[in-house]
Image (cartoon, rainbow, N blue to C red):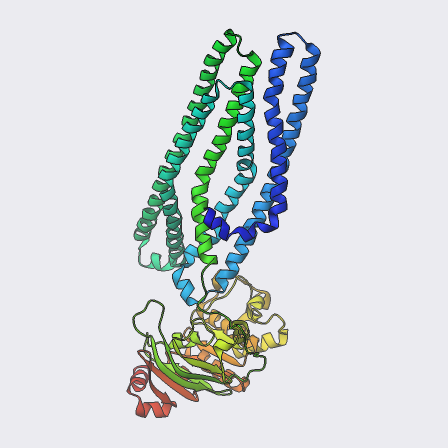
Length: 573
């Protein structure tokens, strides 16, 4: 935990003043709490036994004042600790989110989406909870325990062994419990990842589950991981449940021991009644300090695991990074060139792409087609640097894309992914997602080119119509057309269509391609498609097969020279 907290130390620096203020207030609270038994001892020894009524009233008022002072410190520390821990969690969560958004495909393959969600939510909540407890209790416990030992010894040195016995018993209990439950806490966070994954898959594929009557199978998957998580939590809670009764047993046993031994010393005139009562309270305060530490041992193992998981994400080295001295990339024509590009997915034994070389020119349409799994989408993912090439290079306007910042590069690319992704909001907010400054005229024109304007205008609120999460209230074709319009609103010199016409009917597909050709003149257009009809009018067609270029040319040329292309064409036409 200490090593992990050192990694997260930068998050505590802005709160050093708050931490020092809390420690000061806790010291004042501990002074007030430690003074009360001593005052009570004086009341018994000097007031009750000697009958000094004025002394009892005077000391009683002092005790009330100290109680109010301690309560004020408790309230103030609670407020400061809550605000600091919430702000700390906000800062960590913000950095974690920014780190995740900078991940390339390799990092997302390393950390699953379910795990990243758990780390961003549950793990940070564990850190926040333990920080509140540390600020309110853990800083207070050592001050209280140390002061209690000193004051208890001032009342009776002969019974100091009772304090030592109490501390040893409590420490053994805490250490034994921590050793038992720490491995379980590590398992729990992994099981939370798994539970999150199964739940997300079930919710995302709910229609498929129902269509195949696989509800019982999914319930069994969920019940299996849920039961495993529940069993681990039950084991931990049972272990921790043993601690509190045992500690109460120790404390009550210690009280009886003090009364028994103290009564003999009082009878021998070696101790006063008030001193015995004060010694008893100081011992209880020392025991309570260790109970606070015991509660920390309950929370700390899980928080330690969570902190380590957060640090793993924050310390991850990015595989796709901006260059130290980036080349300015303000004015781009959109000329793209692949030079002997090969690519291998991390952990794979063989290259997925082999020596890919082609050129995509402004004002022309370059199409890529091939059998399923031939690497078409992989080629498109290399252009915006979702992954970096293994060998070779990709040039835009003669500049290696690795010499340009990711922001500048992607700012020049309009990308329509294979899966249409829309965000909750409105149609307008989705269309202007990549260009907030776009005018309404540009937005409407882009929707017209994408053949989306008609169905948008037919909706009750038009461009202000609500879009649910993931575009769930739209059909597949409508989502694709809005995705295409969103890329057109961006007005980039390069526009990549990664199989983004698949959900369109042939008529809409034809009208859309015709509209793009008529209205977008100087843009470099790259289309990945499965349908021959989508790409047959392209200026250049590249045929991929098992990660290699199997042919290139126009539709007429490839029908004569490329067997793979002609087979695809014949099967569809």
